[in-house]
Image (cartoon, rainbow over all chains, first blue to last red; front, side, top):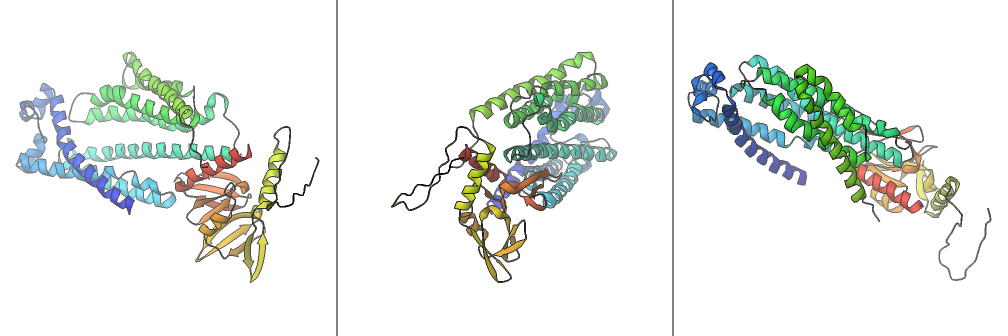
Amino acid sequence: MTQRMSGKRRTLAGFLLGAALAPLAVCLFSTMMLPAEAQAVGSAWTSGLHLVTPAMAEAFGSVGLAALVQSLLGGLLGAVAAVSTLPFADDGKTLAARSLAHFAATAALFSALLWVCRWVNSPRYIPLWVALLAILYAVIWLARWTGWYVEVMQLRELLGLDPGPTPLKWRETMPYLPFVLLVCDLLPLALGWVDRTFVVDVPVLSGLILPYFLLPVAGFCSGVSLGKRQGVCPLYPPACFVCYLPMVWLLFNRSALFHCFMVAVPALMGNLLGWLYRRAVPKKETT
Amino acid sequence: MKVELKIEPGRREPEIVILAGAESEELDRLVRELSGLALDPVPVWREDRALLLPQGEFLRFFAEGKGVSAQTAEGVYSVRLRLYELEGRLDPRRFVRISNSEIVNLDKVTALDLSLAGTIRMTLNHSVTAYVSRRYVKKIKETLHLGRRDRT
């Protein structure tokens, strides 16, 4: 009952947030539009901030109606996103079924938002965007699974089924490696592709958001998680560095080498912080 | 090993104290066995025949239909107690609930595996399979920490 109430509150909060974020996102896009690009798309982009894309306003015949539809779709997507963690309360087949159902609902709303609001130039890009969403789901699943795996490892150790830590904790670091590969290799490739297909002709995602936000946050959070569970794992920051290295030359050039540090240094800091937390807050024991 | 029995008139409950110079696996095992003997045996039924089995013999207790069953290495018995009643009677350092419908003997766990869908499979005595609900993982950890602390 409490979970149901919590779900309703989260749905409502997600709807309101999504409804507000959708026009804000378009406003942000409109500030990023270069003059040349604006001319190519239509002069409407040049006149300042926009709540909806000019193509959507034209399709609906009125900016107000278009903004209403956009907020409704954004709100529905936000509501679905807000309850994305609820399926993880279960396990086994129930978890798989509920996750699939949630993905289907999210993909449908996401596709509707992209096309009805004319956030993409052509509907042929939508399956690729859905594929990107599927990758995001895979990353979340993998992160969750990694947490469960570490928990099982801890249980095995407590039950006397597992030997002690491996040298440099390489085995303990291994469960995090698929996550690193996804964040440091798959994500940059995907964002690079998105930048090429998106209506804004600026590599905002791969050139700005990836190195200055996504890589540090992912490196730091995974480092904290690893540190809290396994203590200091010295191989983890170098692994992040090495995994990103091919992307420097595949997507950018030598000047982007600093991207490797943008993930490795936060990973090191997070790992140390997680280790300090583990030392400072001993595990609760019942008496 | 020297064994000594002291009779103290007026003492209501027997107490066993082991004196040793250092910890060892043998001592741990002895403590576990003695602890198991000290705990109340559990009454079980098979074909209308009642038996009293020591707690250490049980692999698990599980809900089956409307009743509760107990499994040992020898077989399955029916138990005329609810799972929550069993929880109150069983050794809390050894038995733990792993799902809404199952209590296992942690001393009998021989393997623990995780599936891709997040299902934790527990193997008891190399043969019996039980599934752990993730909601109970924290409780299992606490029980294991408690058992370990009490033994040290």
